[in-house]
Length: 126
Image (cartoon, rainbow, N blue to C red; front, side, top):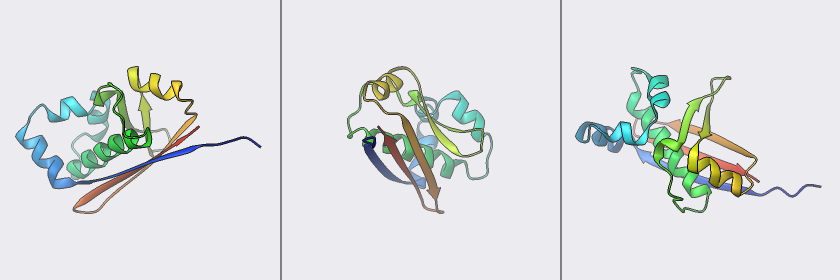
């Protein structure tokens, strides 16, 4: 039987906090979210809930790696819709290097939100 290690990260974000950050700092979205993430979200009615859920997912990813920021930029961890329409984590550059070095074989992601909070859980499978 094969040994499997699961590493879990969970984060919750107040949607209003993300909305205020976007309104106060015009560069916030461009620093945190990739062009593809913003393109996929488009002009959704619930844009701030979606942005907050993706921010929570990026934080949950860091927590699943032990809470250590490994020097990548936020855009290296993308939360995108997959072929099946579900959100998934896509990594590039330094974030991808770190995950490969640690032997992560699969990344699971779940997002949810209410009118006030967004939550994400990330499970790394090694």
